Image 1 (spheres, helix red, strand yellow):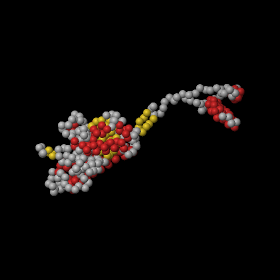
Image 2: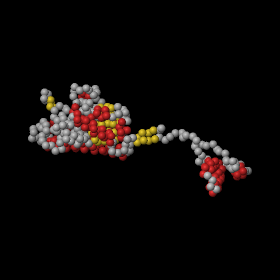
Image 3: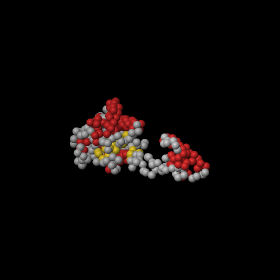
Image 4: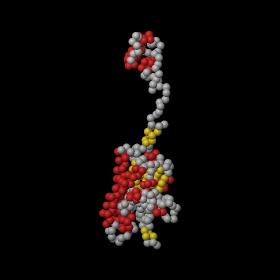
Length: 372
C-alpha cells in the first residue's frame, strides 16, 4: 500500500534538516532515505535515554521512515479458509448409491408379487427389505439415493451391464458421496457350487471335490475387484466406498447335516467364504492405503460380516440366512435359498450404519474451501 508523504513534525523542519542539502540541489532519493534513517536513529536513541513514551518512537518511525504507520483501509481480500471434513460430513454431503450382487439387491426377501422398487427391479430382484433401502431411509443424504444392485452380478457385469440395463458403475457420479456394495460371490461361482454340494449322494465328497476350482476363481477375483474400484474412484473420487463382506453360512462348529450338507461340507463352505472375504478385504485395503499415501480424498472401507450372523446361521432356530427352499410344484430351487432373511438384511444395515458413523479409522482428506 502506498501512503502519502507526511510532513516533518514541527521543530524538525528546515532549521534542523534544511542545511543538509542547502546549496546542493535535489539530492538522490537513496541519499535522502539514508539521511532520514540516520536522523531517526539518533533521535530514537536520544528519546530512549530521556525516557520518552513509546508512542513518540512510533510517530518518528512513521514520519521519517514511512514505517509503522497505522493502516486505515481494509485489505483487498482474504485468503481462502480450508476446513477438513469429518467422515459423516463427507458421507451425507452428496448422493448414496447402492451397488452389488444378490446379497445387496435383497434376493433373500424378494417376492415377484411385491411392489417394484423401480423399472428394472423385476429382473434384478431388488427388494425394499434389503439393507440398502434401510440405510437410505436412516440418513439425510444431501444428493438423494439410488439403489442399483442386481442379483447374479459379477465384477464384470458391474462394469458392462446386465439384463440389458446400464452398467451399475454408471450410476455413480461426481456428486456421489457414499457407495456400498457386496461383490465377488458370483465370480467364485458360489451358486453352482452350492448346487453341487446339495444335489449329491449323502456320502459323496462331490462338495469338497470342488476345492481346487473354487480356490482358482477366488484367486482371479482380485483383477475384477481392482477394475470395479478403479472405475468407481474415477467417477466419484471424493466418495466413501464401503465393501460389505459375506457372512459365515453355517455354524463354526457344525453338529449335524443340514440340507444334505454334512459337517465336512459345511466347514468347507465356511472356509471358502472366509477366503473370498480375505480377497475383498485385501483389495479394499490396498486401495485405501494408496489414497492415504497420495493424500487423496475419499476412502475404500471393508466391513467384516463373517461373524455377523453368529448364532443365526443356516440350521439355527432363528436363522438370518434362508436354508434350502424348494418349489415342489416346479421341482426347482427357490433363488432365495442361502440368502439373508429380513432379519439378516437388518443386521447388514446395522453394520453399514455403524461404519458410516465410525468412519474409516483415519482422518479424511476431503476439505471444504471457503473464501468467506
